[in-house]
Image (tube, rainbow, N blue to C red):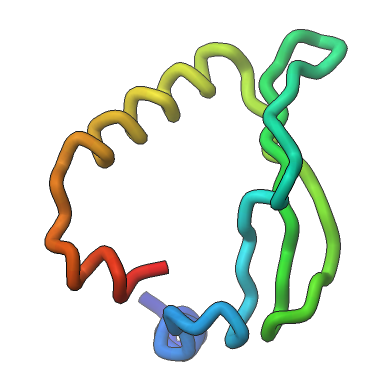
Length: 87
């Protein structure tokens, strides 16, 4: 890990009003693109202020892999206090 990476990771916080975050865009559903890919609407927030919108576009295989990974994570029953502290 470089010194820059250490400084960047040290500033990460669970507070949604601090730092740069990429989150699901509220109220926007996943969709299929004209090419048949899966598009996940996202937005970028910096210190609680909206910076811009975008999409994570995935092939069917990439979306299937993500689905499997999410399923494995959700199947684990995390410690409730840990789940509340991580956002």
